[in-house]
Length: 334
Length: 67
Image (cartoon, rainbow over all chains, first blue to last red; front, top):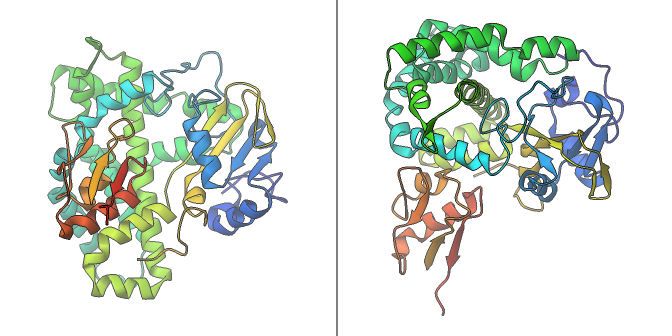
């Protein structure tokens, strides 16, 4: 749903909340790749859109000209009261080098193969329960009743929050990731972390009083250069883990189910040859990459012949890069 | 065939370890390294190639044997 006027020209007026993009962005990217590989829009105060793999990668790696200070394009631009780079509001995703590497490395032990493998049995059980609950229904929304439930419940468990709070997380995610086309003032109120901040603060205080073997206690006890993390850092990273853990995963699962629903030949082949699943999952993650991050231009300069101005948004559609025929085989297949 | 992981480029995505655990192992932070210093057993070459083409950081290189 978009509160913005319809897009008239994708090269000069694009909007990633437009129903045309939300429903089927692939032909838009395919056309831009041929006609205008770095598109521009005056919306959101000025936004650029590279769609070729080479350009998306160049921006993602160029931390000198592009900052990660704000990674979600919205009407609300970072103000003087927002935490500046290099830490940002949700480290490490909003951090710039060299702090980014430190904040990221801090999280890695919790996401190494062994601790993640330990979550597999309970996650499989959860998935079976969700499928059992659909028994007897001739149709149901697999995105809502299956895909969306999985990461919400898993991340709530990882953070050590009460399972009955899982439904509240959907609203939090909507505020942060989806409500990006609301007016700046409304966006600021959403970002003000009122209810969300209070909720996380309560859980942090519980964990300070009673440490657990979960991600929340892990963060509260983590150290950088011999010091515990700043409270803002802990809160920002918890919010990041919640948002990034949930939104990306439900989008990836939902898009994969959508692909299989609309490509019966792929569905039949996977059912007949389940040993192909790991390859199929890699393909889903490539072609339906569930992340479109943003950068902000940090200084005036020229990129691919386009005049970047400090403060312009740079939207990075990773699935568009992954579908660039220069680097990838299309269509999707295995 | 020899396989090498560039530890400067590796960001710990673990795709190689997931696809070819006989060829790659990871440390406690999830950073990958190649298990074999020398030539890979031929039956592991396909796994090494799958890891190479799926590494998001292009951190893996494969050196084919001189014919």
